[in-house]
Image (cartoon, rainbow, N blue to C red):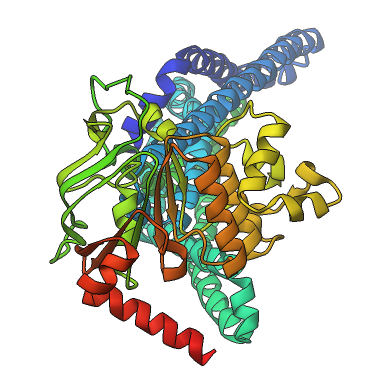
Length: 577
């Protein structure tokens, strides 16, 4: 999977890779040629006392060294560009694919894991590409060329290479084999650290409110200790690599000098040839060391590549149509026919036999106990999920046949958890309509009962909003989220328990403003409070994934026992208060 992934994303940058190969070849040839020139100086210059010959060959060596340096710098430059390019492209591909995921796929991977895969895992693959371009490309050239050049210097000492190279390969291989499972475990534990840290930062108010700092500190320390333990274990094995390499190289050097001295003594070999042979052996062993160093990086990069490929190969359960419908009559009529929805592997469907019609100009309310399936039901409209049975229609067209942008443009959704992005009040309100004027923003704030507190902010529309909207209250956050949906001027508005943080008076004013200013739109409201939906044209009572009652408030009090119980329980709670 690693080779396939890198090959796919390096293909558009083949010119950079060609440049790396060419300049690494030039650099390697220069490196292989220098020991021969050095031997020539020793045997034909120093040994004979020919200063002119020494200066001449020395000048040639200097020129070759300059060429080697220039080629090495250029190769690294091209390699770095290729590595950065593949990192950029991988992050873009992951981001694009995750953007296509439905809630089902996002929940499957989890946000912390997706973040790790987009950052840390991509970095591992990127680093492997960089090291491959700077080390691995030149390693086989140096190894093969070094063997050829060493054999030219002295054939009888070649048995030392036959011994030293396999010993080095076996020693490094044993270390690498033990490191692979540690790298795989490390990535999983990094996911855990990200998850714990994300939960603690997001829920910092809850942690402090319940005085659970000690418990959360213990949780993080455990996750952090697990990562540290795994990293230390991998680091200890990695620390063995260089001592093993140096041991083999030094023993090989001693062996070359020992046996070479005997050959020089009997006149079979010259001092310069021995020096060159030793340098070539060192180059060969360094090439092997570079290759084994890459072998250490490959396992971790392979794990990361598998995790990246898992995201890229996951198809969204919300499949876009091949020939989408791109035009609709602008009415906003919503209809569900015998809709069913089940999560993968679930024994029972979340929704069963759900059928209703929400008409333009009317308010359709959905009420029921927690876990009844209300949020899942409204999430089927913008295709955050796709129904596993039945049909969801907008203006008579199945939502699965609609162009995605057309569908999302028709629906103004205020989710159960009102989320604001870091920026300003204006940038958040313009999220669905970038070209909205200030007057349009103020009009939406007026309807959402948010104008008063925005005007009270010193910067007004330019007031800063922290990530998640943590610098405003829950009620203010909900009203800004509602205003953001209203700026779009959609035909269909879906409010998923979006009034829960509002006081009763604000709730009433907001619903009246909606009824007055968005008279033609289809309004679907999910609520827990009966007071929020009492004036709805149609109320749907959902229980265990089924609609067990429908009608107006007055009709349901007479016909639906479940609705009557909900009303009775809330009235008793208000009386007790």
